[in-house]
Length: 337
Image 1 (cartoon, rainbow, N blue to C red):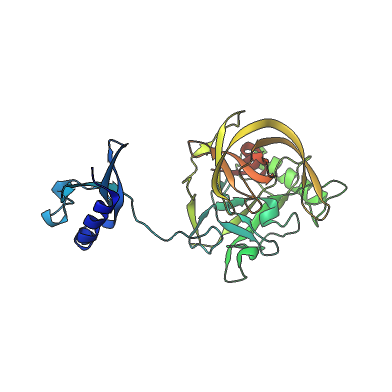
Image 2: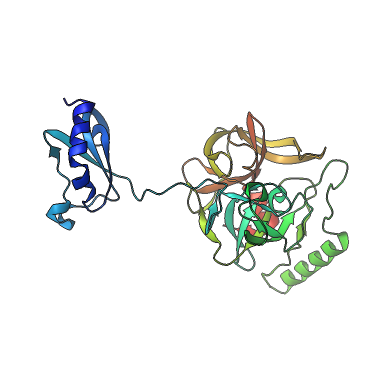
């Protein structure tokens, strides 16, 4: 069996010739793999963008099975590119990267959804990420990356705030504006009238009331061409799935990237601090193991295996993660996947 030094010499002698072959992007030293199992035998490992049958290659592009009695292994690695940080400027921007209302620090672009009435594509994240904890107005600029990561207006504007669900803080609103009772009454009446007349269209106020806190969420209208409708490491979300105790979940976020966790508690009443002494109590929350850090707020939480949405991450600590149930997020914002 060859030593690593012997394989290294063969690599040096053949590197230029191997790199000239079609699809080859790298050459190194590894263990020979057979049907996915490590044989422990040292070999020359050739990295190719895509494995192709010999019938589709010219003879000069064949990678030999042996070189100077040293075995050669070929592994498919796809296109290797420099990885961008989640805090960088992304265009088009996928889910899982830094985003934020122009007046905050930064959170996470959670997912892409459709307005249930118009079918228009919208960006989903938290209220405290895109609506500045109730302090924003429809049309406010959403930046990517968020201001804490260098995002500036107007060059980094990726979207405009469309609507959000107001957070009710202990001892008062804590923000400048919930939807006023008159406006809510008018919208309720018009929605009732539309339903009576058989119309599927609904009037959705810019700020949506909740009798008690169940969600911290908002949607924004993206600038044309600025987004890529998939989430880093997760892909395109294909639907939803109810949370269950001991269910494996994962998320793709601005600060800690792609992480996994286990759902531990359901139907939770929990107090959440928002800084400056503001505290909000949330009902019916999902609690999972630690899988996030500050800046991951707004991440979509999906099933551990399938791209099915379970909830919207909005809070946590060093030992736990708190998640809004996805069905309430969709219902209150009048959106669908």
